[in-house]
Length: 206
Image (spheres, rainbow, N blue to C red):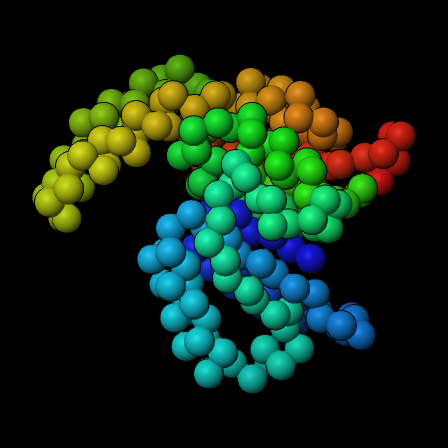
């Protein structure tokens, strides 16, 4: 089973589903992807998109089943212990109140050998690029938000939340502290965002 947390619009779930549907390996029972989000409106967007996609894509007969459920990343008590093979969260963990609680829940629900994957905004490494990126973030992005949507505050929050989120090394340490092994990360676009990964091992084995 795959659990996509804070994935209401379905972007990650759709990519995982389509990749599995195109696989040459056909398991007797197609795997299940549960999409959970604390915002019901976002989940409705994902469900509407899923229905439109299914109507136009006959390959989905072999695809994993998608389930949609309102849920809090900090408390997934409706997910049994050690029942998830892959846990994904994209651009969501930055917005929670207690990052450590989310990581503990991810570790709890994963099976031994299960994988944690998190895509999140991060820190640009090169000093010059970092200065330019920060100036762009705090001066241009909120202004664009105000001009396009009339909502400067939301875009201001976006850039401030990115600055407050732990950098790559500190976040990797937090993942390891939650119990994960083999913790690693890959930077994209000079560190504008990163993918962090880790495994739940038992006695050093997947």
